[in-house]
Amino acid sequence: MDDRERVSKKNKQQKARIMLIMALSLTTMLIVAIVMLTISLANYGRDRRLYEQARLLAIQTMQPSFTPALPITIADKTLSLEPIEKPPIEVDFSTVREEGPNVLGWLYCKDTMINYPVVIYSDNTHYLTHDYTGWHSSSGALFFDFRLTSQLLGDNLIIYGHHMKDRSMFGSLLQYQKQLYYEAHPTMYLITPKNNYRIDLFAAWFTDSELENFPIQFDTEQKRRSFVQMAIANSMFTPNDESYYSDAKIISLVTCAYSDYIEDSRFLVQGWLVEIG
Image 1 (cartoon, one colour):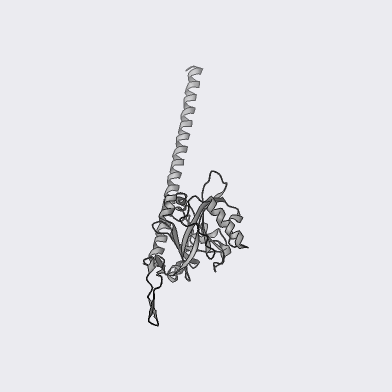
Image 2 (tube, rainbow, N blue to C red; image 1 turned 45 degrees about the horizontal axis):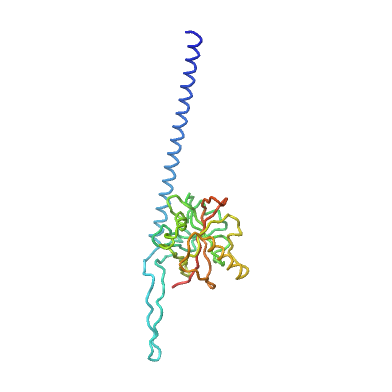
């Protein structure tokens, strides 16, 4: 065998080794990807089952949106009262708090996956990686901004949640970029142990993560009005009712979301909290 044949054979062997290494590397990467996907799907499944169980235990009845009020007769006159609006669900907080003692409310949006307990903690990071019961979870939980405290004291109640790929948690919020989706889901409900609220949505928009974009108190009425006007001006949908609710609190639902124009962006869906029966 001459030198050229030996060199050629050696080159072929080197190429074969390289191809083998590449094949092994690709196989390893594929196996790792499959394992990670399997773990991710298993976690998604576990989280879905957990919250479904919470719904089965905590949500007691489904009721019509309005309950007729009984007429009152005074001095031979019958007063016709307006019907009392009720939330579409009732929540047994004593039951749900047995598993999640930090639960302060329940957020519900008809015909969507938003149907979850809302918790609070001493910081805004714990429930990014823990479910409402306190166990580690990639889905986390919906949680109030810790600055509100357990009394939910604030002009703007902020709730955070992950944007999950299967649209669980706040994964469906980005659908509010579409006018038709808003028109199909213009209201949500926040149920608490003391009060029930209808949420009349008025804006959905992108912003950055700077704290100034997430106030919980407004020093003046003008600052509150300016904040609402900014949200509506940047909103991806046009609300059915653009009235300014001077006597209602604001609620802001916040999730991480990619934007072409904003670095480290967040997506907000906001509404008025209207107390109901």
